[in-house]
Length: 415
Image (cartoon, rainbow, N blue to C red; front, side, top):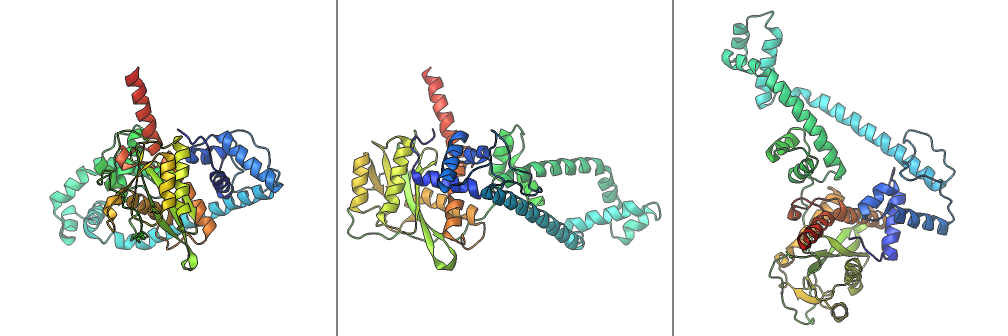
């Protein structure tokens, strides 16, 4: 279900994402974009040829040079990529050392909190029982002897459980890292189960708390909808029902701001399919004119191979209420739908989508620093969202996988 006709903008963003990602391979970037590896390679080589850059020949599946090795390629772009990989390795090592120092500083406080204080006193008794009587040790430390012996008898089971928790935590950390540090316990649980580990959701949540593995929390939303009082009245055909029985029946769209350093902004318009929450169209620009939402809708039409007979729902922003956008919908055979003025709940699914995007890409930062960084970061997230990111509305399947399974089920029933 890949896009049949890729726009020049999409190709340029794909090439920029590959060239700017340290240690990237055609295979890994193509998987995130949901395209063929050979297609991405062709775009990159064509772009390098246009710029007069001769790429170092590589074989299929070949990975970049080891991060620790000195750059040896004659290709300036390749040397830069190797240096970036080396810098990333050094930064990771520095973060690791900083974490270890932090753990050592907090050790004393850790053994002085709540239940940990009780457990450390039990351990003290066990470590010194050969020198002093257990009865005397428990009396001095104000411990119940029966509690100590109960703790002692359960040591083997406790050690085994801690070992299992550590092993599970390593699996969780890997999944959490692959998600860009965004997945919480529900999505991590779904990922573990798909990998064949029948783990309990409550246990995953407990281990994540114990090992301080957390997802990204919501940021405060800023409203960007500016209604046009002269726009033609469009009825609400959704009634806050953001579901659909088939792909391509119902779409929803919205605009959100993308903050840059210095108080400037880029703007993102998206088109989502209500069936799978797949983002089938988007456009990024430094303005909020009608062209922004029109370009996103045109991309959606290319992705789906047409939108004739479908519904498109939006808020009452002036861009969606303009005559030019209405004409485009008529040309594509799309029936418009709009929620009530000033009611975000009437377009809640899109609001939630944009909140997730900024929460997981900004990760607590106030802005994207500059327009180029913003565009590449958002482009990478949007493509990965479709191909890999698990969605709770899809039973924790990615939008593309959810549509693929639906298609396969229909073929099976038809047969």
